Image 1 (cartoon, one colour):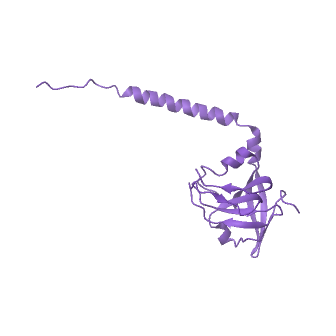
Image 2 (tube, rainbow, N blue to C red; image 1 turned 180 degrees about the vertical axis):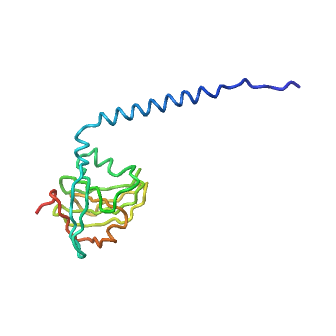
Image 3 (cartoon, helix red, strand yellow; image 1 turned 90 degrees about the vertical axis):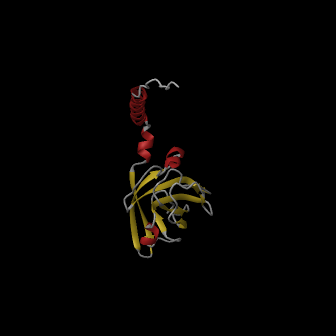
Length: 169
Protein backbone atom coordinates (compact mmCIF):
# COMPACT_ATOMS: atom_id res chain seq x y z
CA UNK A 1 0.00 0.00 0.00
CA UNK A 2 1.46 3.36 -0.97
CA UNK A 3 2.30 5.91 1.72
CA UNK A 4 0.48 9.19 1.43
CA UNK A 5 2.73 12.20 1.70
CA UNK A 6 1.07 15.52 2.32
CA UNK A 7 2.46 18.44 0.41
CA UNK A 8 4.85 20.61 2.40
CA UNK A 9 3.04 23.55 3.92
CA UNK A 10 4.79 26.87 3.89
CA UNK A 11 4.67 27.97 7.49
CA UNK A 12 6.21 31.37 6.79
CA UNK A 13 3.17 32.73 4.99
CA UNK A 14 0.81 32.74 7.97
CA UNK A 15 3.40 34.29 10.29
CA UNK A 16 4.28 36.90 7.66
CA UNK A 17 0.62 37.76 7.32
CA UNK A 18 0.35 37.81 11.09
CA UNK A 19 3.35 40.17 11.33
CA UNK A 20 1.85 42.55 8.79
CA UNK A 21 -1.45 42.37 10.64
CA UNK A 22 0.23 43.20 13.95
CA UNK A 23 2.11 46.13 12.39
CA UNK A 24 -1.14 47.35 10.86
CA UNK A 25 -2.93 47.11 14.18
CA UNK A 26 -0.15 48.97 15.97
CA UNK A 27 -0.18 51.70 13.33
CA UNK A 28 -3.97 51.98 13.56
CA UNK A 29 -3.81 52.18 17.35
CA UNK A 30 -1.16 54.90 17.19
CA UNK A 31 -3.27 56.91 14.71
CA UNK A 32 -6.34 56.49 16.89
CA UNK A 33 -4.46 57.70 19.97
CA UNK A 34 -3.24 60.79 18.09
CA UNK A 35 -6.73 61.48 16.77
CA UNK A 36 -8.40 61.29 20.21
CA UNK A 37 -10.36 64.45 20.92
CA UNK A 38 -8.66 66.97 23.16
CA UNK A 39 -11.81 67.15 25.31
CA UNK A 40 -11.16 63.58 26.46
CA UNK A 41 -7.65 64.54 27.56
CA UNK A 42 -8.98 67.56 29.42
CA UNK A 43 -11.64 65.45 31.14
CA UNK A 44 -8.95 63.21 32.61
CA UNK A 45 -6.77 66.00 34.01
CA UNK A 46 -5.68 65.56 37.62
CA UNK A 47 -7.83 67.27 40.24
CA UNK A 48 -8.16 67.01 44.01
CA UNK A 49 -10.91 66.37 46.53
CA UNK A 50 -11.14 65.92 50.29
CA UNK A 51 -13.34 63.58 52.30
CA UNK A 52 -14.08 64.73 55.84
CA UNK A 53 -14.21 61.64 58.05
CA UNK A 54 -14.39 61.05 61.81
CA UNK A 55 -10.67 60.16 61.59
CA UNK A 56 -9.82 63.46 59.85
CA UNK A 57 -9.59 64.90 56.34
CA UNK A 58 -8.56 62.44 53.62
CA UNK A 59 -7.15 63.97 50.43
CA UNK A 60 -7.25 62.30 47.02
CA UNK A 61 -5.83 63.11 43.62
CA UNK A 62 -8.62 62.32 41.18
CA UNK A 63 -9.49 62.15 37.54
CA UNK A 64 -12.84 63.85 36.92
CA UNK A 65 -14.94 62.14 34.26
CA UNK A 66 -18.05 64.05 33.28
CA UNK A 67 -18.93 63.09 29.70
CA UNK A 68 -20.86 59.99 28.65
CA UNK A 69 -17.78 58.69 26.81
CA UNK A 70 -15.36 59.18 29.69
CA UNK A 71 -17.83 57.77 32.23
CA UNK A 72 -18.39 54.69 30.03
CA UNK A 73 -14.63 54.01 29.93
CA UNK A 74 -13.96 54.79 33.58
CA UNK A 75 -11.17 52.66 35.01
CA UNK A 76 -11.56 49.84 32.48
CA UNK A 77 -8.33 48.03 31.65
CA UNK A 78 -6.34 49.73 34.45
CA UNK A 79 -4.26 47.31 36.47
CA UNK A 80 -3.19 49.65 39.27
CA UNK A 81 -3.90 52.98 40.92
CA UNK A 82 -1.91 54.84 43.57
CA UNK A 83 -3.32 54.55 47.11
CA UNK A 84 -4.38 58.21 47.36
CA UNK A 85 -5.90 58.40 43.87
CA UNK A 86 -9.37 57.86 42.47
CA UNK A 87 -11.82 58.63 39.69
CA UNK A 88 -14.82 60.89 40.27
CA UNK A 89 -17.80 60.26 37.98
CA UNK A 90 -19.89 63.45 37.75
CA UNK A 91 -23.43 62.94 36.45
CA UNK A 92 -24.16 66.71 36.62
CA UNK A 93 -27.57 66.16 38.29
CA UNK A 94 -28.85 63.74 40.89
CA UNK A 95 -30.12 60.55 39.27
CA UNK A 96 -30.24 56.80 39.84
CA UNK A 97 -27.14 55.11 38.40
CA UNK A 98 -25.70 51.62 38.15
CA UNK A 99 -22.10 50.54 37.68
CA UNK A 100 -20.43 47.29 36.70
CA UNK A 101 -16.87 46.01 36.65
CA UNK A 102 -16.74 44.78 33.06
CA UNK A 103 -13.17 44.95 31.73
CA UNK A 104 -11.96 46.33 35.07
CA UNK A 105 -9.20 44.17 36.61
CA UNK A 106 -8.75 46.49 39.58
CA UNK A 107 -10.94 45.77 42.66
CA UNK A 108 -12.57 49.01 43.80
CA UNK A 109 -14.58 50.71 46.51
CA UNK A 110 -17.39 52.84 45.05
CA UNK A 111 -18.57 55.82 47.08
CA UNK A 112 -22.01 57.06 45.98
CA UNK A 113 -22.35 60.80 46.69
CA UNK A 114 -25.45 63.03 46.66
CA UNK A 115 -25.65 66.58 45.30
CA UNK A 116 -24.62 68.07 48.64
CA UNK A 117 -21.42 66.01 48.70
CA UNK A 118 -22.60 63.51 51.31
CA UNK A 119 -21.63 59.85 50.90
CA UNK A 120 -24.94 57.97 50.91
CA UNK A 121 -23.76 54.46 49.99
CA UNK A 122 -20.53 52.48 49.74
CA UNK A 123 -20.00 49.41 47.55
CA UNK A 124 -16.83 47.96 49.06
CA UNK A 125 -14.37 45.59 47.38
CA UNK A 126 -16.18 45.14 44.07
CA UNK A 127 -15.42 42.04 42.01
CA UNK A 128 -13.04 42.56 39.07
CA UNK A 129 -14.53 41.84 35.62
CA UNK A 130 -18.03 41.29 37.04
CA UNK A 131 -20.98 42.25 34.86
CA UNK A 132 -23.35 42.32 37.84
CA UNK A 133 -25.02 45.69 38.32
CA UNK A 134 -24.06 47.80 41.32
CA UNK A 135 -26.98 50.26 41.55
CA UNK A 136 -27.36 53.36 43.64
CA UNK A 137 -30.15 53.02 46.19
CA UNK A 138 -31.21 56.61 45.59
CA UNK A 139 -30.47 59.38 43.09
CA UNK A 140 -26.83 60.50 43.37
CA UNK A 141 -24.71 63.24 41.80
CA UNK A 142 -21.38 61.41 41.65
CA UNK A 143 -19.46 58.23 42.36
CA UNK A 144 -15.87 58.15 43.57
CA UNK A 145 -13.96 54.98 42.72
CA UNK A 146 -10.89 54.22 44.84
CA UNK A 147 -8.80 51.12 45.44
CA UNK A 148 -10.62 48.32 47.25
CA UNK A 149 -10.11 48.55 51.00
CA UNK A 150 -9.59 52.32 51.00
CA UNK A 151 -12.93 53.11 52.66
CA UNK A 152 -12.21 50.72 55.52
CA UNK A 153 -8.54 51.71 55.86
CA UNK A 154 -9.33 55.45 56.03
CA UNK A 155 -12.56 54.98 58.01
CA UNK A 156 -14.68 56.53 55.25
CA UNK A 157 -18.36 56.01 56.09
CA UNK A 158 -21.86 56.83 54.94
CA UNK A 159 -22.58 60.39 56.09
CA UNK A 160 -19.03 61.67 55.48
CA UNK A 161 -18.77 64.83 53.37
CA UNK A 162 -16.85 65.12 50.11
CA UNK A 163 -15.38 68.54 49.31
CA UNK A 164 -15.03 69.28 45.60
CA UNK A 165 -16.30 72.18 43.42
CA UNK A 166 -19.01 70.04 41.76
CA UNK A 167 -20.93 69.76 45.04
CA UNK A 168 -23.19 72.49 46.38
CA UNK A 169 -21.83 74.44 49.31
